[in-house]
Length: 302
Image (cartoon, rainbow, N blue to C red; front, side, top):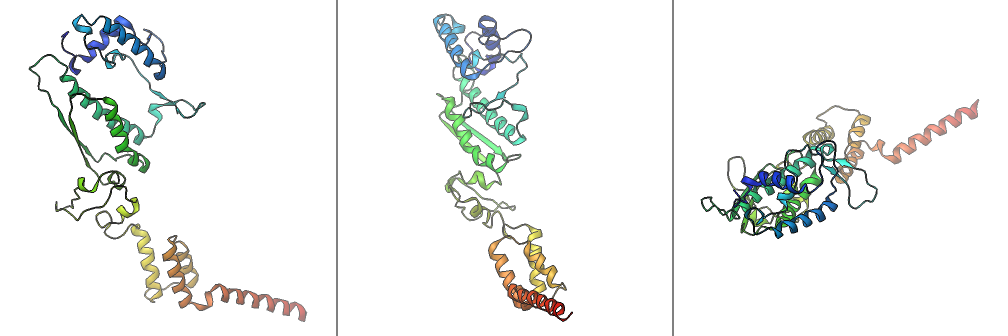
């Protein structure tokens, strides 16, 4: 076991080094607060101590992971904004489901990659060593706010770079996704767009593309990017102009006022004034002034 430095014996190494060094000064009872920025120095000190004992097999390949607390403690992760001096502490378990899910997804991928890497350091030649890895994320965007979807690929790649793998030569990552935000970070030649019948669709131009342009392609929205109810309202208004629906001018105007898309709103208002010329702002103003004039005449005749 002394020669086994793979993930299989990692927890045993962590327990042994904790009993030997107690790197973080953890107490058997009560709470101990470990600040990551200060813990780095302690880990380096104990790594140096281990190197001084490298003539003994167990200490030959001690890593930073081995000096982390063993999984026998109840741990609560507290986050703090490093860009704000007086930011509040934020417990990890209070983050949104999407934020936690992204952390879990990325850390899980890195964890398994680290396990594959660790087998190369094991002197037991009976174990299979892999130098190429394939990761498949199935609908990874579930629970993710659009902002988190935008950040996913960069955060994942940053995490892989920080691992400094020496033996894993290539990593292929496949995303099965409906998210245009994720697609905007993937080069066009790496995208395979499939329909329900498993037929390949036309090429999607996605890398660095505007999210709305991607959404408006027929692959995502065959009938446009407007909600079905809003489309029904617009179609109903058009039918009113064609006298296929009975509605008062006031109610029709109220429906048109719901339309926020500037071009649609402008065209519908033009159609409304063509159908009801007495409802134009100028006509309404004339009507209002005539009413005021009638009221003044009545007062004059009293």
